[in-house]
Image 1 (cartoon, helix red, strand yellow):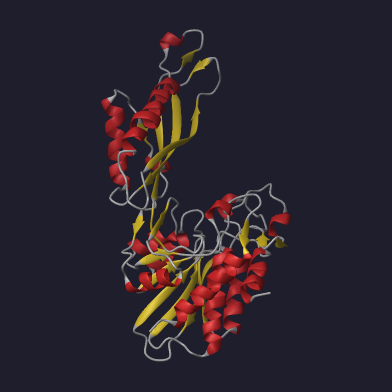
Image 2: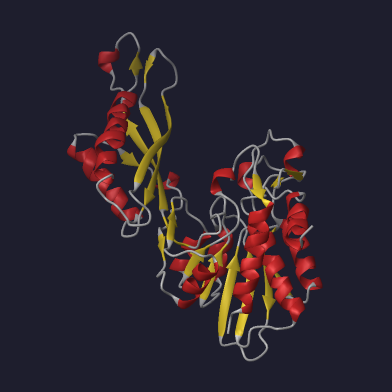
Length: 379
């Protein structure tokens, strides 16, 4: 069994479900167990270790390998420690099982496979004693990526700097230089309540919202399909939640929807809101954006694929052209915080967040070997 596979088995067996996805007090929630295990493993391998608080009981883990000489540049490796989950899942999700060349278990793909590959590669370099001459390597295993990205936001807010970052996500070992962003809003229509027997005395907020939803899902969606990014394709929009009214025999006076808008470079939360407001107002609809319910947005990310370390990693991966992905990640926070960032890791995003999550052990081991070669090549 390789070091990466052994490490991944141990990580899967330590639940670290994002607490926002579990009821208060669920013992399987939180990143602390994984962070402490990784800290002990990294320290035993000769790395400098720090547990940096993000929220109570939810730290980032930072493990550093100092260069042989003076620090002149810094490389950041940044997977995340939290996983998705839901209260009804059984503890079997956290029992690693090997079948047909795959390791099954919660987080095996997203992104404990990346954690295992990156840490095992870094420990191999540390054990070999042939450290980079002037490049400090920092592994930052970040908390809360699956919710509000508070781990990466805290890292940037505290002034962390690096010359280049590799964010760990399952990319099928492709070097990703662009991803979409996400903007989420809650919209509300306000009507006037009345008895269901006299609907003409009221104003139906659900009816007004139905018109708004139709405009968003048809005319606005068609508009978005006319825009295209060379790596990311078109921006998209989805109305994913609706709530209104209290009972069938009352004209509803309020209705709300939640929308998810995936953005491409050049778009922002402000531009998206302005477009929607113009569309709805231009069609005679009074729809209110609820500022207290607006969720934190994640900006699209795009990094120059010709940066030397991006090119070097791509050559090692045998990849001729850069790639893009539709999902967003901590790469957005790091990139907009001033660190040129790419995404790379073993596994396929198609297996992430599934009931039977798994990662190919071959992909895991190839990813660890490729990363080790990359780290050894640093100046």
